[in-house]
Image 1 (tube, rainbow, N blue to C red):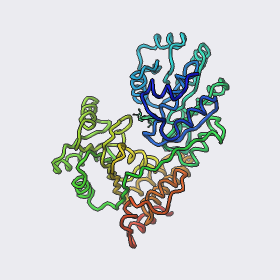
Image 2 (image 1 turned 30 degrees about the horizontal axis):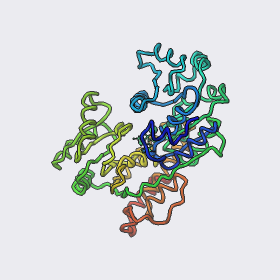
Image 3 (image 1 turned 45 degrees about the vertical axis):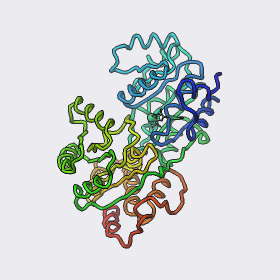
Image 4 (image 1 turned 180 degrees about the horizontal axis):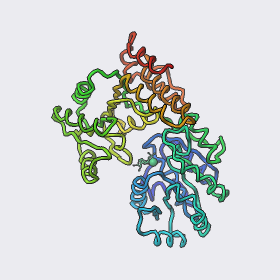
Length: 409
Ligand code: ADP
Ligand code: MG
């Protein structure tokens, strides 16, 4: 087998492994089942791409979204990895199957629902498999924030190839979700590898809403660099974008209801810009690699701590100072409780726990970073020195009372 470090340099052009990458790669190369929990941008793809090159056979990659798969495919092909996607959106399926049968693929990307069919299982028996990579593995758990029932279909497939190592990858898993992923995918508890989640250059601030538009205009005025403002609805995006035009900055709108061409154009304009503000629903951000985002604002409560971490994590990827500012109101909690009442009863406990964790984050008079990192299983110091509460410790804050009122009962 070729030395992993050599593949890292020669194929990927990277100088060093980052964080836990080496640890994950080594474990996979030993053929052991693994769950890697690494923040967004930490370099999860490399953890299966590199072993796929080092090992005999094809690595099957399970991914939840066709758009994500196509991004990954382009990135893999760009460094010379032999890869293909097998989805309903592809018109070269016969060719892909041929290449797979001929052993001419390092990576084959598929959606979970495809992976479950008997026909597909028979196809997989025709070529040696190196590895199962299960990306966005939190989708397998009802405790996760993005449960996909199709991910539950994977287990029988994995079990019919017991000798093939499994690598599950996710950025977003609290302790409960992690334990569930291990169990659902048949990975032993000692297979868990967790990377550090701290993003020390991001300054966290959380403020009750007074006049959202005013508050966000002030924030934009303090932050000359590019920024993302998350609004909760398409309508919210449209109105806020119009109002923010008064700042004189380039303001771009982004939501799933826009014409795809407009969406692509706005995204490209944002990525290329040094001072644009994009107002978006959470549809914006996945697969976007813009290192110099200086601020992320939330005009309302995110879906979960995981979602908050992931969305704010788009700020400051270059390591320079960045700001994450969340504006919330009691009505956000009221709406969230309403939504919980509408989901199936089996999910109530998980959803309520998720909302309570968010409540603890917004209502704390202590360090925000500590609450975030503890949520991801770390034990950070009492104060970080780079969040609103550490920088100016609050007195008795009304917000606490308001949040408590909506969290109890
Ligand atoms: P994730 O899936 O964890 O969010 P990606 O796999 O998309 O992250 O990688 C994020 C970025 O980091 C990509 O641009 C990738 O090329 C880069 N990257 C990954 N590993 C390394 C490394 N060892 N050194 C430098 N850059 C890396
Ligand atoms: Mg990824």
